[in-house]
Image (cartoon, rainbow over all chains, first blue to last red; front, side):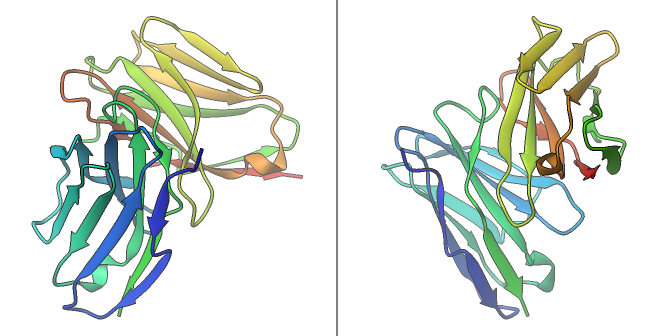
Length: 114
Length: 112
């Protein structure tokens, strides 16, 4: 069974641009959660999608948005990039809601904003 | 408001000895706890979990202990191996919104 796939693996953007990150969950998993990790920081929760609906949202500005498609694949978009958005963005999937069982993480997308 | 706290940013342990990582929580509604291990530039991987109906769960070299009255859980790794060097996160959930709350992580260094 294939694991969680995130693309691209690395991304370099400049301030003001926008970016879209993609996540393909494990087959059969209906929940996709997104996290941001910056150097020296823990995992900051962005949002969770379950059956195409956003179920939970973290404390991030509206520049961060996401969506989930009917095949459970998810995308995350960041508009008007800032230097502070440079981070490792992680996607995790599970069959049920994120707090009800273990999560399976992808390898992440390393975003650098110049 | 940090509901899940890992007060030790780092921990250094001799190879072969026991590693004990600690986690405290404040929300009495939490009833499910997990530990994850993370290497640099990779996603976390699940290690072990425990529900509030138990006070101990074992999986090979890893044991998690839960003390509900103290709102404290700990992860024991015995014996510690060089490949255990990583950042360890504890996470907790409970209530109806299923949100998982994460600690800040503890960096474990296993010395040869």
